Length: 166
Image (cartoon, rainbow, N blue to C red; front, side, top):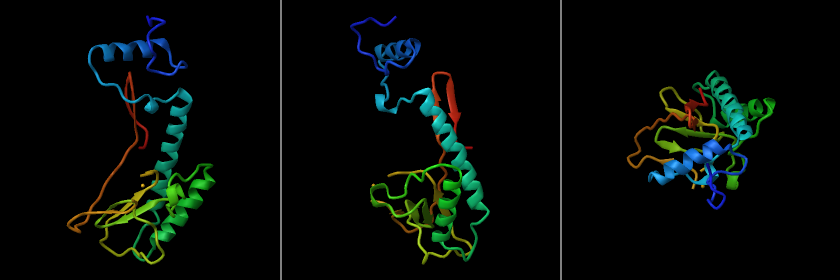
């Protein structure tokens, strides 16, 4: 039971049993995540829907990624698909980012900017990121060697983990 003088970790809308579990973990010396990362059931459902759309988008784009296609064309396809599914493009105009998605080729690790001048060739590695929102944009490998990555969104709850984007 939560004592009235005890400061809640969770927002008041969270069930008391979750608050009690977190208070117990903290009392046992566990570090708790910042409160700002907690989500309401409505927010979690929105994240799930976003994950479904992102997965569909990546599947759709994979059908169109091939040699002689520009990264700007891939970006245009992502823009049209996302809007047609009633979603918003997270990276577009975020702190001045010019693309709907990030397209990173070979030694570009992440946050590559789509370009009409960047034409895919046979044998390149292309990372397509449809949701990352991180500031200095393009990040390259220090040794200019190719890079690849795979990301998923994972929901962590007291009942276990759920992969949102698959």
